[in-house]
Length: 167
Image 1 (spheres, rainbow, N blue to C red):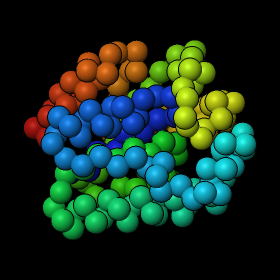
Image 2 (tube, rainbow, N blue to C red):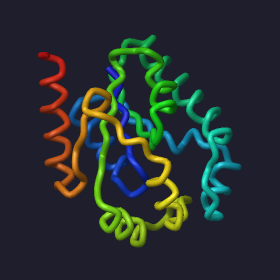
Image 3 (cartoon, helix red, strand yellow):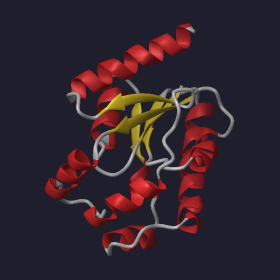
C-alpha cells in the first residue's frame, strides 16, 4: 500500500507523512525532494509552477512509487497533488495508492506559512495553490481537517484506512 499525504503548502503533509510512516513502520519520502532546482527556484522567487513544470516531477514520484510496489513495500509519500490529473499520474490506476487530503482554512494555512522557516516555498503562492486545487471527493481520498492535532489526524487517517479496507 502507498499513502500520499496531499494538500496545499502549509497543510502539514511532511509532519503527518512522517508520523504515518512511523505508525505504519514503513518508509517516508517527501515529494518536494523530487522537484528540479529550476522548480524550487521558481517557487522561491514567488512564481507558481505550470503544468509543464509539474509533469516531469509527478512522473519521477510515480517511478519512486512503482519501485516501492515492485519491492512489495508499504510507503508514505507527500505531494501537493492539487489536480485530479496529477493524482491520476501518481495513482497510475493502482488501487493500493491512497490519497490523504489534509485541508484547512486559508487563515490557518497562511498563519502556518508565515511562521515556517527553511522552506523554498514563497508564502505568497498559497492563493495560487488554492485556486489550482481540485478538491478530491471522498471516493478519491481520505479527508482530514488540519485543525485537529497531528496525533488526531494520524489516528483519523488510520481509522478511515481500516474502514476502506473492510469495505
